Image 1 (cartoon, rainbow, N blue to C red):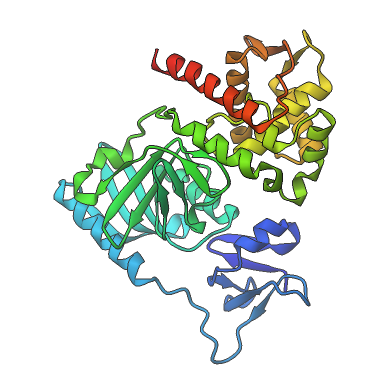
Image 2 (cartoon, rainbow, N blue to C red):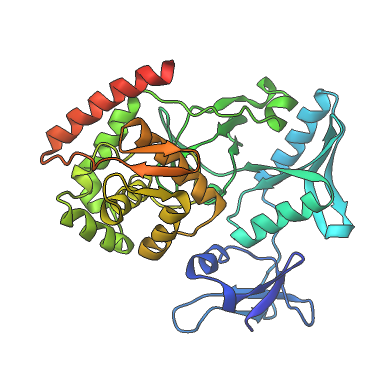
Length: 373
């Protein structure tokens, strides 16, 4: 059986990519579209992915974890202390949804969703659209272990691929909340950020509901991030980046000797590649397809990235590429004129790791001064 129901959505395995299939493996809430009984998702090596009805004695429901229940009630208690009326497990029959926590604030309605298990992009987006259709905003609070090293964080799997401007994480062990505004994804899992953080009782309702706007920061720690990438850059790219490595070598460098113009903070996760790798895509395309003084549009770059490197031409991906083109304009590689760009010059190619690190240091000094203006 290749179709099943997930919430109010029909999942058709024939239409999913391999990565989307992988994200379904931990779900336990599929139901048969005919008899409406639970079914199990199977994706082994001998048979293609499919759904099958449960056998007698196999438990297939998706009970909430103790952490999930604890956080729901902790959030309701916290909201009520601020004079906000909040409910646990609020049902919305019109969209066939049950909000973990529902509350209203300043004439706005919110569904607070506590998420610990990975979910498919389809389910994530559908849940958000369903609530939006009845005039509600979804606020996601993710659980799971989070790694931390100064301004670098490693996100738990449940947070990977969540294309939001802010990510909220709650640690059950110490009741600490992290609010990441415009996180910079170094890889699909590692981010660079300066989050709002503290015990839950240190936050207010506005911290939860109000976005702080552009809060991307920049400091000299970026030098260390680039240094670490250079040290392992040659081995960094997966097999899917083989074409990129070939194009780099044709132009006289590998990922360890990448031009300093590659690898600068851009928020978002729409491209879902290492920040250093996808920015190399952009620069290689400019070097390969455009001569100095040639003009181009953002859509030209997106189309070439799609054909050369299979990067999806989504709105979030366009936003990231546009932000990177602004960095290249700062470094004199391109100039901008309203909606168009002009390619001015090729980046300088270094021949040793030491030259690359020294150029990185000089660029960071310049950028730091511009950042503080």
